[in-house]
Figure 1 (cartoon, rainbow, N blue to C red):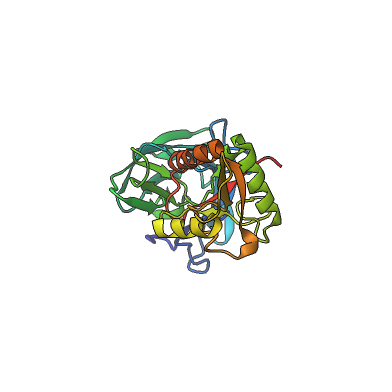
Figure 2: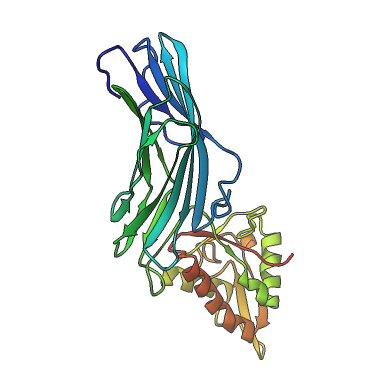
Length: 322
């Protein structure tokens, strides 16, 4: 925020769970300019889902510019900003579409200019070319922010945005951040990126009837209902061979004699931090299942991990027919 000439003040305020940066001190001057960021509840568009997924996120918000002179409102403008992310499961290059539209402008707000910048951290780089906008009804600007991450391991970051309003000698910026996203080169043949806080849902166990029945029984009876997103706690992946062996040994010891054509199936999975060696007895169980189902299960689980870039300690749900 800058002051020159008259005792004028400009500030931008954010809401709707977005980070507020640098709001002006209301008593610092008799003239005041605010921008208030409010969510728009409607979906942002056909390519933008209101609910985030492992790979997509959207938001639509109205930024309102309020101009005060000697504590009297002398101008207002509304700018609707829509942004839509689409990450890639098998690429570290991804994009965000951003659109801004002036939907209202009156008084001294008319003629103010808006610019926007975006940046990310670590091995991530954001490239954007957002044109300056003039506060006049009907003015629109669109841009695509292109991202590239060069991590050889993993990089967790967020996009930081600054929407800057300028009116004569005044300027102020509303700052907010995207949800955290992670790019990695730790699973599968290609690097890729996800929103790691969004828990993916494993549904392929439904193709294995006896295994699905065992999962459902243990989810229903266990006090923590591990993996059941309707009432329980998620599973978290482990890549520790030591933990996996301990889980298998407890749930399905080699000393247990197998019936012909059958295999011991445990749940929660041995490759989870909620396996038999890690949780109380009431939260895990086992059953005899056809060996053919057991032989397919490992591949289905590995494919799910790769498709959703589920890394060590990432959480996920397990959905089977009820």
